[in-house]
Amino acid sequence: MTNEAMIWPMIAHAVLVFTLYVLLSRRRVAAVKAGRATVSQFRENLKEPEDSLFVHNNLKNQFELPLFFHIVCVTLYVVQGDNIATVALAWGFVVSRYVHAYIHVTTNRIRHRRPAFIAGVICLMLLWIWLGVWLVFN
Image 1 (cartoon, rainbow, N blue to C red):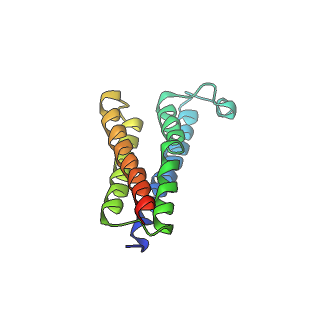
Image 2 (cartoon, one colour; image 1 turned 90 degrees about the vertical axis):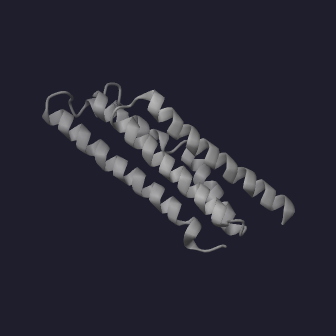
Image 3 (cartoon, rainbow, N blue to C red; image 1 turned 135 degrees about the vertical axis):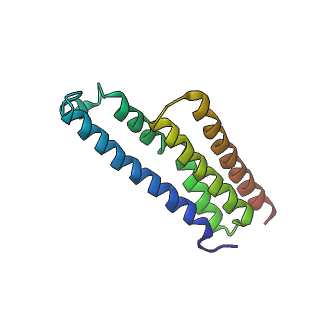
């Protein structure tokens, strides 16, 4: 299948990351303007208002598990192991990241966040399993 289909979920994840950076900046500026924080608080991030802290934590989270997502997508693309199922799994991972991020920066309820996180982990594990199978049998 090797075409750009495997690249689009990675672009969609990058859009999420850049959106979170914009949201973090807006929430920090709003906190300073409202007097709930000072600019110097953000120098070392030792104390941050809760609304921007949720975004900050989620943004850091976008560079943990998603690292393995981008690696497996590029690798599948390079070894021509991508197919309709891997593209669907990649989109499943990205959708789970959007849902997880939305919950994290709004209500931040673990009982809602966790299923989205687990769904993404399952999609990612299946992508890595497929990559292993593909490499063994091709």
